[in-house]
Length: 359
Image 1 (cartoon, rainbow, N blue to C red):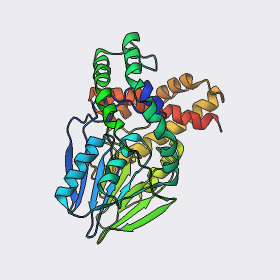
Image 2 (cartoon, rainbow, N blue to C red; image 1 turned 30 degrees about the vertical axis):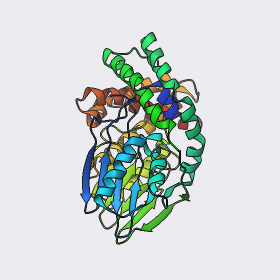
Image 3 (cartoon, rainbow, N blue to C red; image 1 turned 135 degrees about the vertical axis):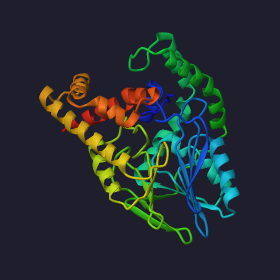
Image 4 (cartoon, one colour; image 1 turned 60 degrees about the vertical axis):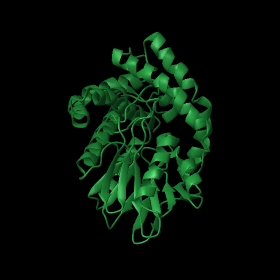
């Protein structure tokens, strides 16, 4: 299953189909601790992945991390929360600006008038800049996908497989119902921003919000619950195949290293299943580090030139054990392996290259 993601999101969104690195066909709920739940959403009809939502219930009020993509999914989550507690959702954090984590904001604001929507300063700026264009360009996705089907190639010139053709046809069919939901949506921006850290007590439960550095975006935020030793990472960490199609790879290494120092026994990724140790986190740190270093070597060898990306990528692929890393993150799952090959690895090389050749 692949999905559009882009401008970094939107351009990727319009140029290629990506995956929630493990296919998500059903909505599932995982209890992390007493009064703490992770909701994993099935993919939207247009094949867009929906970020995980975490619900933290305190003695006084409720804190929610990420509002997912579809208004209907956010409404379903709110109905679920009301089954768990009569306490109001007082806080909603957007871990970063990407649409699959923020588009449900308006639904929460309508359901809970006293809601405070929290985000890093940079995340608010990016949402204010990107969101209007998303609504304007969304209808064009169907035409773009149809163009890929007509030419037989995706936005990167890669010949479509028969499975990819089916995925694009399914995505085209899903654009209209998703657009119908968005037409009724009132987009809501964060109302409270922070720079480095914000601590909120929701009644017997301390919620620490931290910006550990840039990585996936300029404004990534994580949530740490010290008593429960739960870490909620947003898209700084996704499972099983990491989302590495943009951002700041060299800075991501440091940000993830800081995240790894937190005393966490449970990690909720931005997409994928709950993690119960730091093995995957450490694997991502090592992989990004190796690729960033190798890209730097190849830029030095081939010359500081913005037009040498293809040469650099080919050289990097020869210079590291790419099959070993493909197996580490994707195993033998065809969709995950395709995602690693079409987005995660080349996206990481491209972003690392953009950093390196400018230095």
